[in-house]
Image 1: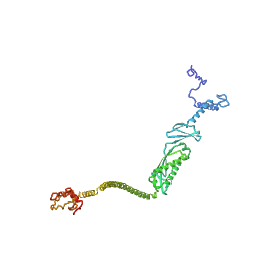
Image 2 (image 1 turned 30 degrees about the vertical axis):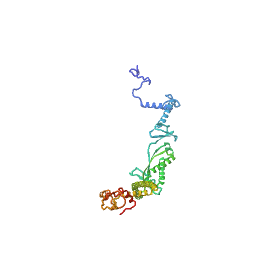
Image 3 (image 1 turned 45 degrees about the horizontal axis):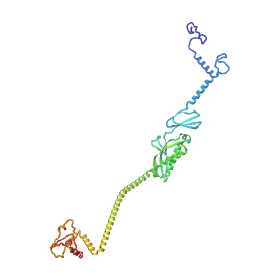
Image 4 (image 1 turned 180 degrees about the horizontal axis):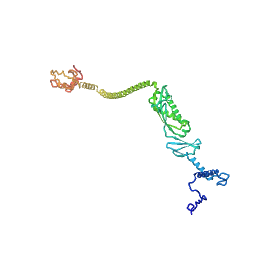
Length: 412
């Protein structure tokens, strides 16, 4: 029969006897648990006598295995919590071991020894940083605020100029950025300002304000980057932008007048060059044409002279053989050439004929030349006038008369 069935007299096999029915005493449970924890860590249980459980003079020692497990768990918690870190894309992790640089980690999930053995600093190497030289933008003021201490610079021709620059840069070497220079951003500002003063100091004011802007920013970037590399700042300058370059406010009106006068001068020069470009080619063309005409005329005259010289040499040869015949022939050719195109009428008066017939049809022709009145003479002409006796009066009609013409001159 079970101890808790009717007739079992409520005999509890664990308690050794009956007990009053009811819920357990919570205070007793807490007291027992506290005594067990004290015994685990080597302390006496409170309220225990010499014959009680766990009695004795010395403390009760915990098992070594349990102590080892507790120590290992604490070590794992100490090493794991806070030792894992994540390096995002575009960043680098710089690990320091006992305060000294250890390594640079790439993006991803990383682990390092717990603090204070190792520590990590995350550096963004893709962030584009900017510095303003000569002005400060933003803040409560809508417009940029000028900083004269940085903006005013002296040019080579001893003029003061107000210059404003914007510099974009980023971290190239995280280790050098963290450990080489105390304030790398301030170092960059000072390097750019120093390079700007050097470049402007060896340039004229007109060069800085007009055509030299691109050259100036290129030189500033080169000099400033050389200084940053020398100091090992770990920074790389991406661009230097010249925001504004102008004379001081006190002389801006006078400078504007000078600029306008210079523009007028340049405009007049351009107009003069345009006129010269229009006139000079035409003059060169005319000169070239006249040179060609002169060359052609020279060639013609030389050729004609050479031809006449050759013909004269031939005539001379014939003249040496027959002087009289050659002389007569030259005379006849000359008279034929001279009188061949004239509008003169030659009349033979030696025949004694009173009836004179003039060739009016030939005289009134459009091609006839009327340089003078009709004349008489002994020379032949291209017009034959018959006389009353029907005998021609020209040289072609009477060969003998042609010989007489060579001996007599024209009778007027």
